[in-house]
Length: 163
Image 1 (spheres, one colour):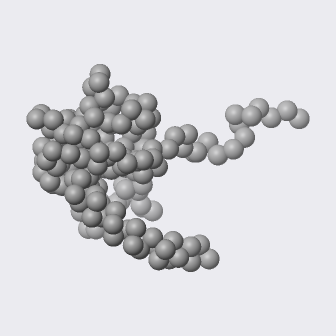
Image 2 (cartoon, rainbow, N blue to C red):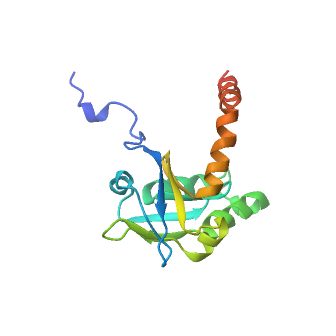
């Protein structure tokens, strides 16, 4: 029996990984350049939405579709009946925006999202596997310092959950 290679394996496997930390300047029109390493993976149009913590999330359209399917799903397909789910969906979907990456790799961050996290002159652009996070540079530095001090405890806690 002959099995073609492309039929073997998990078809849901993400073929890219967004990783790394970059500090980029925000111009006077509220545009920031996406790192060159991210541009190919992100495509021409992306979704930017409020994140958790003090950041913004950027998703490819394909990843956004996965996220939105998970957020709107429920056993009875009546997720709108649950107040917590309605409120979180409003938070994520209501303030989401589709933006284009321009010919030189910049995105325009909508003002209401920029104000939410206090973006001014520079932004930390952080790859987190299947999404990009945009942080106020100072808030990113503070968050990073806290997490670095807790890294061992976090690893221990996450490791014990697998049992």
